[in-house]
Image 1 (cartoon, rainbow, N blue to C red):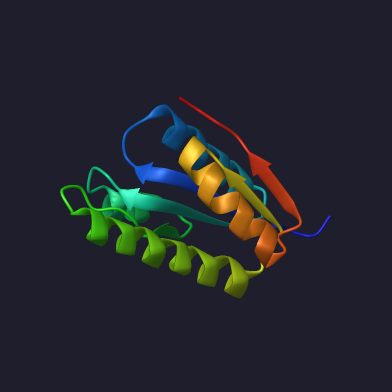
Image 2 (image 1 turned 120 degrees about the vertical axis):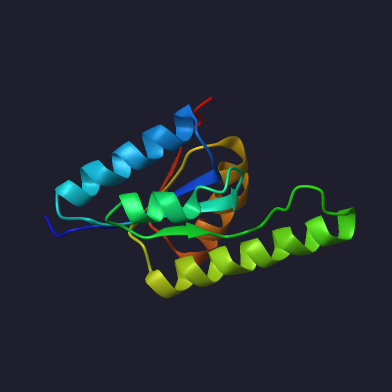
Length: 126
């Protein structure tokens, strides 16, 4: 079997169960020769740099949410984040996307379908 190109999509870079599962799965697939990217809708706890340094695969923050922002700024951030996600999935042509939370399911799966990612897996960890 040829190596797969896999995108793991989570909602927030934060200490939590869904994030642990996402990172553990990404490491498992990397260890087996697949290409992996982890993307998150936003960085809740300021851990992006630390996580990137600790892992052998790209971790992307889409920066689609800012705490304390007004309604207009929040809306624009979500649009920019979705645009960044669209460019990522269209450019990289992943074989598989797995989403890990309700928000990443709702935002990521339609975009993945539209971009033609053939295998789309939705999970929900809480």
